[in-house]
Image (spheres, rainbow, N blue to C red):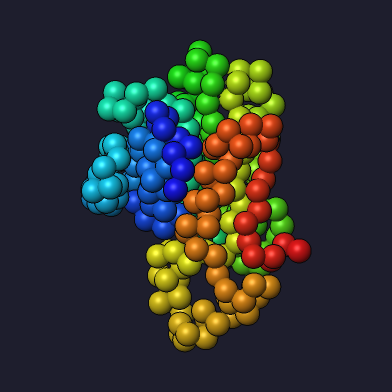
Length: 254
């Protein structure tokens, strides 16, 4: 393992489980000090405890990314504990099934608040400290659902298309500030959220088999594979990359 991120500070929202946890762990393994945000404080602290066992520096910064005051506090507490923020990973997100007709307004509002508003507010809080320093990386959680339509996912798709668009807008707005902004677009990834959805199905094994069957690689992605994409886009190896949507989907979009 290299130390590509020695002396850098990375903040991962939604870092208490799944892709977020894997990403925070991966940054710490490669030398970064990691701030772990999650709406559930116990999950954030649990991941920090895992990281600290490896000898890396970490801090839990619980909070709701849909709340402006929380976002500024999360950045402030990260910098107070670990130093100037170098990398923000806007991983926090929620999902739901439904068409426009079957999605109720409360579900629509919650997805917009967390996925899109949360990405906007956390990015703004990070930009407020990054722009004066003329450096920084912001990485957003997109999805293949932010690049093409899928059935029965109207609200989720709307927010993910919005995140891809916001990524491109921020990339252009802040390229002269020395800040790169990109998004990772995962395909179906085996996370605790997927396990919960499968458990709700009448036949969980059949539901999982149907997910796997649509993957050209014949399997689901792993959180660690998505974390690797975030690390690449945060690293100096991608210094000429901004405004891109990196698809990591096992060939689903081919």
